[in-house]
Length: 489
Image (cartoon, rainbow, N blue to C red; front, side, top):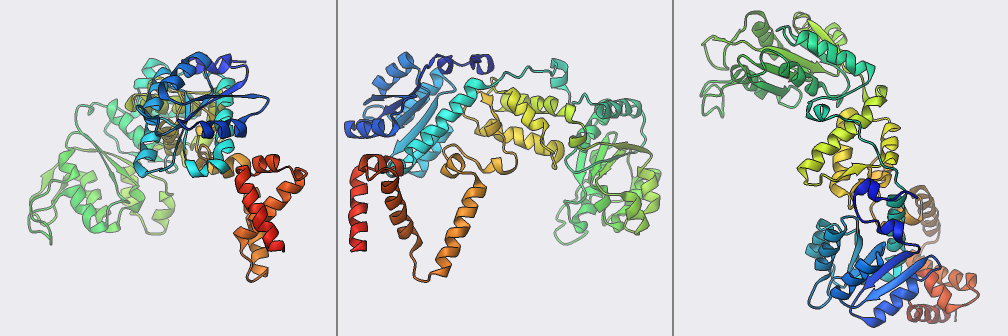
């Protein structure tokens, strides 16, 4: 079995534990006895402590996989214990419980790295579920295979990375066109990294010391886009209380990136054409002719040839912009770049979030490589960022990656832990249809009675086992049975 320290650099407590050890911390001895009875199993060892100091000593000596601690522990709070445990072991799996789950306490618990927060009154139903989820997470960390980084120091410093044949051709093209001033048209699906390529063209050009500015033509209303590009004079329209310098003036000597050029209104296309032809323009509401030296790099995810045929895009402007054509393939067609990009994004977000120890497991990399990535590079970047922000350990496991339906799964979520969503959906559909067919049926009370009756039947009327099966105390089960007998009578 792999020592998780090879992946995370944390303690070897996962490898050391012969049994799955759980530590429960609470100042109430009766609660500790109840929790011990709920969690006791052949492969689980339950330890208890009534104070923060006692809990920390046990944690250091026994290396429990999971710690469940009450918020209020006398002189030291459960949050203080959480912070202390996480400082000793950044991968400690700690569940906080409290009778009053205030907004502040829940938020602070998760901020400090708690695996979950469970209100005390919910424990009869959720204790076993949450602990099982934490033990499963511990097992995944124990079994995780280390991912060997492949990105060099130089690549970490690049603005765009890739090792696929398609991206190597892109890099070659960037090198060929960087020293010219020719207009460039970058095509590709949304999120494929067109702006990054535009920045690389500027970075390696003779204009690299001058400004690089980007503007999304689809994100700005038509009545504002002209002013954004060319500026306006004071009083030229309602709200123009001062002169505005547009992007073409700001970017003189540099590179202007026009993203989503296919969405530029026809009325503005003609003025852009003039700038491309002779390098001059006028501000909105002005008569002065302004000279500018700007290289245009445009990008689109549309078929501009079809847009020209439909008279939605000027043919003469298209040929002015389409001097050099550079196509970016979608991420699904360059899978060999996925691990490089994932590592690049993780390194960046880990540095920003002061988590330099964050790493990917080999299983996570394989999961990323098999995902279709409809949102391309942007989706991959967002996925890595979300996983890094929400992770409570030093290694990102497959469960941490929000891909498809997995994005809704949260630690301790009973529906995720116990049932597949499809099974829950089917069960709910059948129950709701049955309730609709029986007017007057109170669904939840009926379910409580049915589960109580069936638990007793399945355990041979053994109240101790039935209560454990239902996740409630024996006293609660007795009350339910009395109510059930009264309803039958």
